[in-house]
Image (cartoon, rainbow, N blue to C red; front, side, top):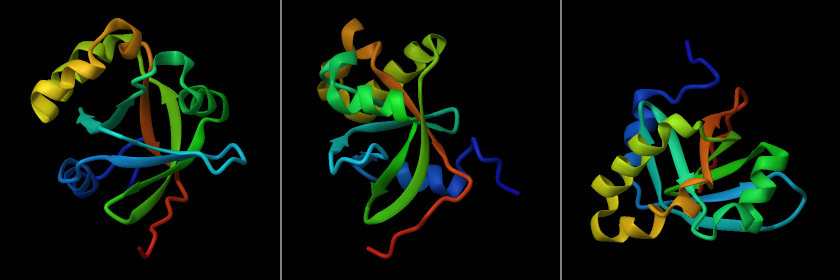
Length: 128
């Protein structure tokens, strides 16, 4: 049985095999953003390169719901600002996954704009 706040192991592996995800916040706009992601302790994290002032990050924190598309599969999600105590583990995830490119998301300004993406109970799967 799936808990609404956890991704299955198969989903985690699916995300880990993808380069990035596309996030759309349920705010009535058509705004989407492609971002790198990491899976840490079974949870999916993304960071806003523009920091907390990024339009999509502000919308995500305000509306707390959206959709992610990963390799042409779409999932309904809940969005929450990540706990500060996860910063180091998320940093390590970015270093492992993106090597030299990870420096772009390791500054304090960007670290403060970390979202945790949870599956929504009514997760939707797109057909591509």
